[in-house]
Length: 50
Image 1 (cartoon, rainbow, N blue to C red):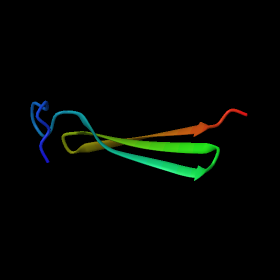
Image 2: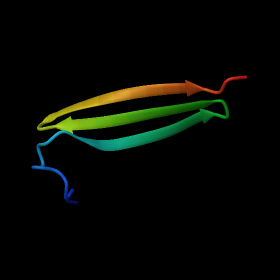
Image 3: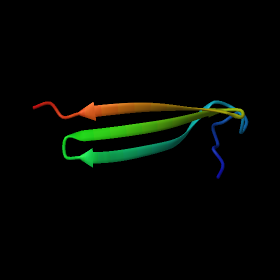
C-alpha cells in the first residue's frame, strides 16, 4: 500500500493501531510508529470513570 503524503517509505509514520477491550470498563490502544527500520510501540490504557 502507498501513502501519497510520505516523502519516502522510510519517513516517520504511524503504521499500526491495535484496540483491545479487556472488559466493559477498559480500553487499551497500542500504536506502532515506524521511522526507517526502527519501530516504537506506545501503549495507552484507559479506565472508565465511575
